[in-house]
Length: 100
Image (cartoon, rainbow, N blue to C red; front, side, top):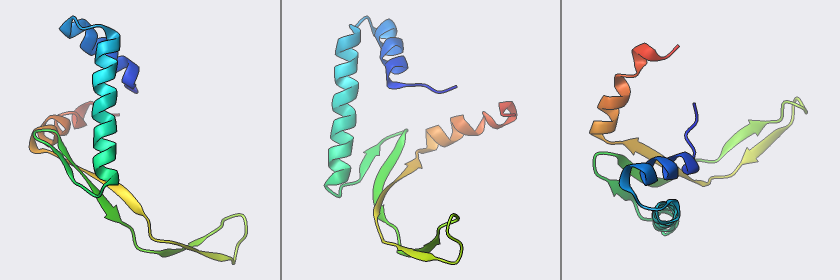
C-alpha cells in the first residue's frame, strides 16, 4: 500500500481535530523547509526519525541498452541520502515476518 500526502493530511486531521487545510499547510511548510535546507547544502536531522544528507555521486560510464556498444559518461550529481534513526530502524525491522 502507498501512503500519500493526502492520506497523511486526512489521518492527522482526524486525530488532532485540526482542519485538513491547516494540516496540509503545516506538512507542506515542513517539506518546503527540509527541501530548502538540503538545497542549501545543510543536513536535516529529525530525532527518532532519521537524517537527510546531500551526497555527491561519482561520474560513471553508462551503456544504452538500445544502442549496444555505445558508452556515455554520466556526470557527478547531488543526491539526497536518508539514514533512518534508531527508533525507525527498530520498528521497521519488526515488519520483516509480514512481508511476502
